[in-house]
Length: 199
Image (cartoon, rainbow, N blue to C red; front, top):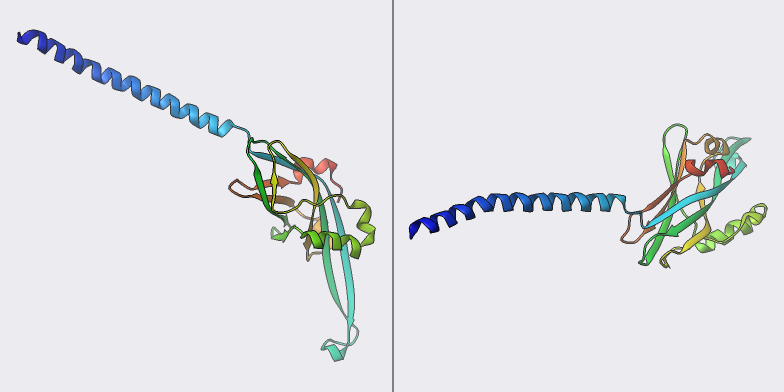
């Protein structure tokens, strides 16, 4: 009566390693499949810089001795207003919460300056203060809005930098970033759409 039991135990012992090997193979295949799916699924949002308009402001103010400066000396102030027309599209079936915008300009010397996008009031104020820019005005990209699934936004963001027109013209790069809550930031580089940009 002992021999059949011994044969059954031997058979079970031989089957266990084979089953473990098959299970391990399926687990590895599943992990590889999940990794490939995760890394190849489309991003939840895409966007591009459609065009760029840069407006240099150059001021020279004379200072007298009463102001602590040398007689006849000029104080020079350079600024650059940058209007970026952007396109942002949702590629997900869930709402996206657009929270903030900023842009980084990399200058010729390798330094980077960041500017927050203008608030709604400041956006309007730019076109009042500089009426020559009024024909460029369209629709601002607003903060703290909810994008519905598949929604596309075409709008403007205004940035301001304390640099000269020459520094802007000699820039190495310009990137606009849009922050979404609970998602990766959307980063739009001017270079992919540089052919259509005017600066």
